[in-house]
Length: 250
Length: 222
Image (cartoon, rainbow over all chains, first blue to last red):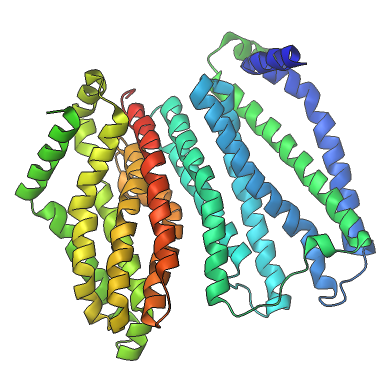
């Protein structure tokens, strides 16, 4: 098992191998992702029962919660990929980190927008400085910083290293930011209407949500594969195997 | 004399001979404070309510602006290469540089802030809290900022990038610092917030020099 993992890890370091194998893997992620998202959306929007307090407006949860979960997870993945790059100098890890950053930021943005839209019927205003929305906003700022740094340097290698260092510093900071925002929120905010806790949801509402979460994860994996393939092609554009590939396309 | 103490001494002498280095952040601090009564409302009651937050935000921005130059000269004139070649620990070097930066930005801000808070009509009980929260908080601002300064030292227009990179990391310090002052002002206990700041200071003092050292090495490959 361990040996097999080690072999996989070493092969992952080869951009050419990744490019070839990911073409075969891609449909295995893309098709289930599409299925989950279609089933989850239709079930969540049309068949799940309406919330007794919030009526139909709660249905945005089926986009909001998966996006928020992924936005946080993606940052950790980006930082871990960056750490692998810094420690073992594996170029593929840097490209994966570069591929994750904009996807994670987009999911974060999606979570913020859906949160604001959800806030309108629930709180009566588009934006409330609620603890979760605020920490999401700060997470988006962290993504902006990493993305700006990944593009800032003259050489790709230093940009990737700078982005990796910052994302690791950010990873250490995320729990501190999260808890300080929650603490700040309980001090300043008069008790607002709490959104439904996921754990107390009814089964008929929960199952489509879980399907959506799985679907978002699969979509995320698909997007990472696609973007990393692009990164591979771009960074290896002067290598002979990429040139051959382009010749074959023509 | 070790390289670290020599660098600290050199940087302090440079700062003493160029008063602008430590005076400019202070003037900036004063000017930003003056903007709030002008833009929002000069009513003393209102000012005393927002004073805690405004003074902290202004101190944070003043620190941020002074960070840009922290490693720039050393990267450009080759001092950085000499550090690396000397075999001296970059970790200690980073701490030394941050110490000097705090001496010429954080410390003066901490000393002057109570004076300027008078203009913001800060409640009488809050002055001690303001002083101690800044005393504990500004070194953290320098430490975290040094990571950003080291990362952006070789970028030509690094100032804006530096703010973008560092501001989100400053938020917990801003929250606890401003809340200590605010709570002191309304007569509540604020030791808890100071305790949080002190623990943040311990964590950042041990961890950020690693990141600074790693980031400084990046500037060599250029």
